[in-house]
Image (cartoon, rainbow, N blue to C red; front, side):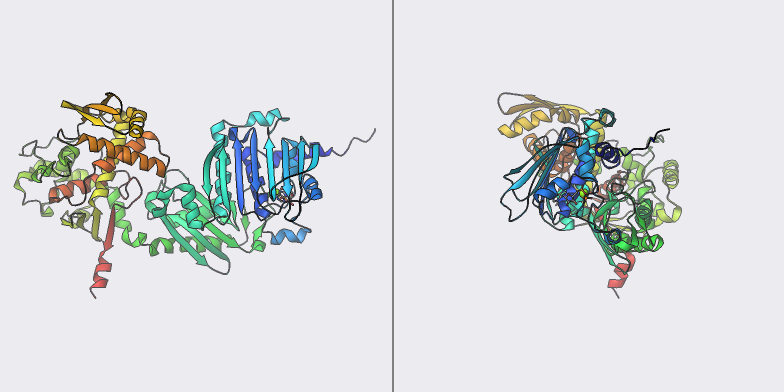
Length: 622
Ligand code: ADP
Ligand code: MG
């Protein structure tokens, strides 16, 4: 029999390697950007078209390549990064197998232009499906541009395996994020279909996170830092109240390379365990610096898993250091674990029938009316609270301090009923007694309340903003608003720009209960308003401030329109500072806050409350 073993042609070998290295456009993004970083670039521009299917192009201002290096770079196992196997153990560069360019060029059309510093002319090379199409000298800026076109043009099976544009686009963006996060000292920009998506200039780690994730992250980050012999840890965790139901923004970088490690994730989650609900996950950006010889590099470069030599110690260090940061930044001490748990239990069971209050009071009674209602601030708080809810909340234990309000004293039976509700919602007797609601109003701005662990201070406007936001969002999502027709429709006039904006978001504004019709150029007629808005309020200024807030929010973060409208409305309708509050109002506001899904911060991420622990108070009084 004749011999049957033969060597595969290079182009086929490259295509096989490509199967490992290049799974989707995002893999190309990763390889090209990593090469640019290895080439010492300080400015990297990524351009993609059609989720990277037709084009992924990376331009850098790095070292560039000589004419022969440019050609060599497309050969398999061609790399400038290692000379011998021992280099593998001291590796700090991104690539080292010399496979990426060869693999990519076997499944796409690659156009490369590169010029080294002090060399007048650069080199342009075009390769398609591993075949050299052309190579010639060219004018070029210092650095390298590599354009990868029509990925998988010759491998239809791989092309068909790609997911929808949205999915591929998300992968591309994620790869971009991961490198951009790891190298804040490098400027990055990303364009998709000719639109600038993200731009981040040379900055530090914290700023980079904010540039990439939005301004609202500024207040969310808690720094983490630790230097030990084994590992140096640096980065940020997000405050516990920003924990997510999905494992979203969890970033680990080891020696500046993004990695996935369920084990280390667990360490961080463990540090958060008493601060967030069981089904939530913290977000973090953690950068570990470890001696490369302590890591197993013998893993595939495109894989994000990694093996550490002393995993258990690393786990402990990480956990302790995150815990310490949470404590240092006052999260652990302020949000007393026990108390925190009790708060999240205050949510009232909406399924349970609400026992009609058998209270001998005027059903229209509203505590807010005892204040100068709907005057200067123009806000009618009355209509915005849910009387049923807070009547239900009154049946507190006898020592609740409410007995001095005879009109609110509930009947025995009802008291019992509601107490049951509270107990079954997770409060024990002691908790009830200790969290007796007593409020004090400070500087027209803060609500002070004594709680078991110390003193809770709420910011009235922020609290109200959170409550209104959740309420409006619910209405918007269910499209079940209640609207009241105005006796006298009111005309409002807007600027050209605001007119367009209002027309754009009219659907959502209408869903809230507004009925607004165009009434000539830049002018509208308001025929109906949400029931929360009192008849005599200044609609012109309410609508203007909704639009203003909307503009501010959409510049801040890209939010879906309903969220944005709800945010804007909450902000503009929330009770302002300076408004004096009665005990009943403060009580109602507090209770409503704790039946919110996310009571601890405003929709834009500012804290709604803080807690001063009793120990802290007694410490100060020593
Ligand atoms: P590796 O990165 O593993 O060495 P690649 O196939 O990604 O393998 O790249 C091959 C070689 O091409 C690199 O080692 C480097 O010398 C050169 N190269 C690739 N991209 C660039 C770039 N943007 N600037 C300068 N040199 C580059
Ligand atoms: Mg590489």
